Image 1 (cartoon, rainbow, N blue to C red):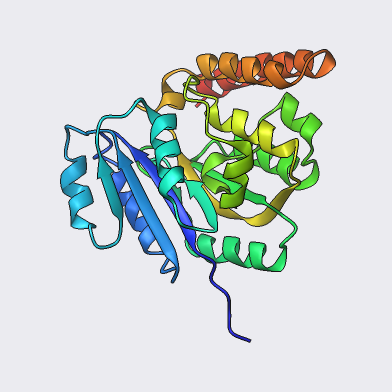
Image 2 (cartoon, rainbow, N blue to C red):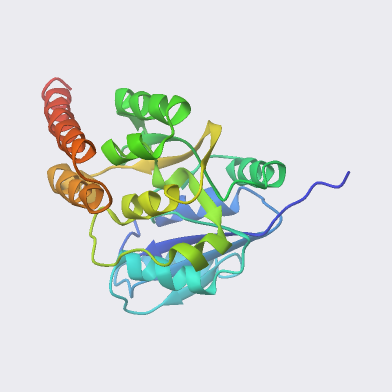
Length: 260
């Protein structure tokens, strides 16, 4: 039987990430997936980003113009994406080798699922794997307790390792561009209310944390917005549990950083 390769569209929102974006691009195009559309939505970078992107003009669809931020760039990319399966990869993150084939195989064999996620490394600015305890903690909940109620309390889904059918976009709509940190969490909470989440028990991507990344700059602000997002869709006990979990996580992060 001939293997099926559904078209996959990856969108990368980009702005002044010349330091990392070539690594990001290569992680996608070196998948050698035979039915790939790679869209880079650049917000008008003023560093070396555009020079790097032009090197890969034959492998990517490049759009460079001023936008309203990360969510706006992702939404614009989703509107023009032609793939049956879509996902977005930030310009400092990477996809692990053979991940797109694993994602395609999952959807081909499990047509009842509309979105899927996998495990995700955390890497530093030098590409070294860090925060192993955080990764193991999220992977535990992801593997054994993928439910709407647990997601309301903690975000166990790693964005770079998550993919969904383009048809979902027509029902769920766009990412909320008013959110600075929690646009993906907001999207997952909307998705899980309608569609069961699939899981691929492999590391599909790597999320990079560094001094210039949003997560690296202020994880306390990230948790504050995450709580507001959760509270938008949930209330009562789940909302209180989310707040309690955030407080415990912040304490844990401070402890980890203190003894690094």
